[in-house]
Length: 450
Image (cartoon, rainbow, N blue to C red; front, side):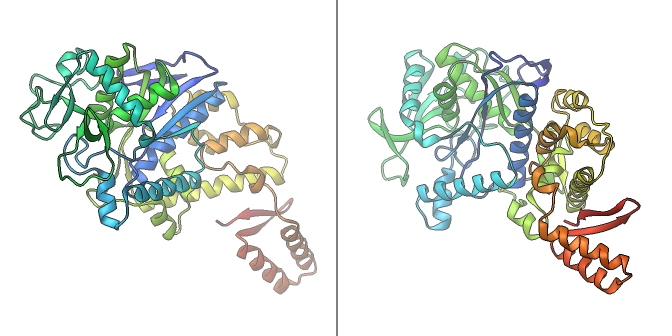
């Protein structure tokens, strides 16, 4: 199996430390509002990754984090905590906001039929471990304390610029983080933020004799070490995480523990709308609920996403989403037809897996499904294949209820008697259940209409 590795900036052979325990960490949502389709495109691709590893015979151990503290509105070290911002917006506590939007995220996650992570980790459950990590960094001389927090001294970590290929020499102060005259270097970042006297901040913990909270990047380094232990195999996230969030995670983890954080780093590219990045700050977002209200199923969006490669930019529009919806319906009807007829298969399992194993080539795998016939004898594999692309309820797809079969039989009898009024009425009754009947030379063929 081959994957693009941000560490080397090239496609490499993927070899896990232990095929029976492939350790993966996925940067999860900040739960201060609903996740939008740009967020979910990333989780769809990492679901594809997990399923492809399983098809290659590997056993995955994946952690997904939930950021419920410490993520400031600037994505750096200044501004308001996003959970605090959400609480003020809705007149709730930060904990109510975190619980509500975590549940909303997991509900949408289930609608997309994404595989559950082996472990779900909320940042607020790892505060003591965060403090221990900061202690390690302080003891090793990687930090310094200023008025608003404990900062990581990036000049002490010689490999800091390597991951994102940062030009530290020409990086202007304030280009990546808000200007702070007390910082030693423009790239230095907070590992722990202090709360000023009188400052309203609901989430606070005492550390170094003062109330405060962890910096955003710290939770990932802490959770990886606590739940996965040692160097992991794959770290996933969005491409926007590369220059700041993941660069800072690496610095914290590797400075503290003296070992590589992850063998591979995978990043999904942006989804755009009208050629602008999907962003809550720009107000151009769609949620899954928005799509459902316009008549699209979550799995339509899942297929739209997988029709493009995870490293490519996708421009979202409803014309293309409709095409994905129609493609998914065509696949469902091919499955139904395979069930009803004796179709000789041209579906080569090894070819399908070869495509996916080549850096998750989902567009090519979609095209391969389009171009080949399925075989009911290979249903277990077909089930897993279609599960990757959205239809993982094959057993429900391939058969009708006894009542529906009875309606089809009565319709055939009416047609045999040339009672076309009854035949049309029964056909309309089926269509109310989302099923239509196509008359063919070998008999009636039922198909889905939605």
